[in-house]
Length: 71
Image (tube, rainbow, N blue to C red; front, side, top):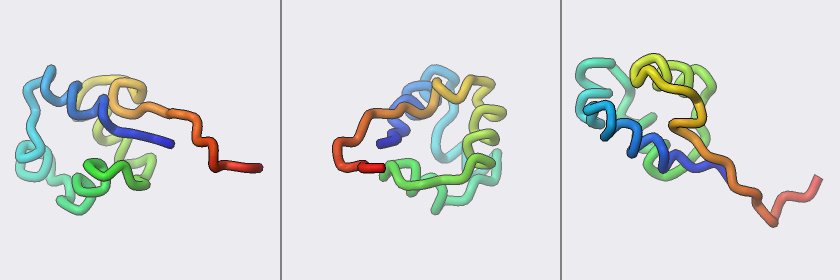
């Protein structure tokens, strides 16, 4: 499972709000909603957030093993 809990912490540390993301950086509100609910987003969105926040990928996303995945 991928979570974006670290994103909100990083945003707070950088002084960037969700409002800033969709007003100053033209991020789509539906993308923010997907992030809030830990839904799938594109790698392009992750790259964009890293550029906006001047951070690494691991500063915004975290992976937890999911017991339900069988390969």
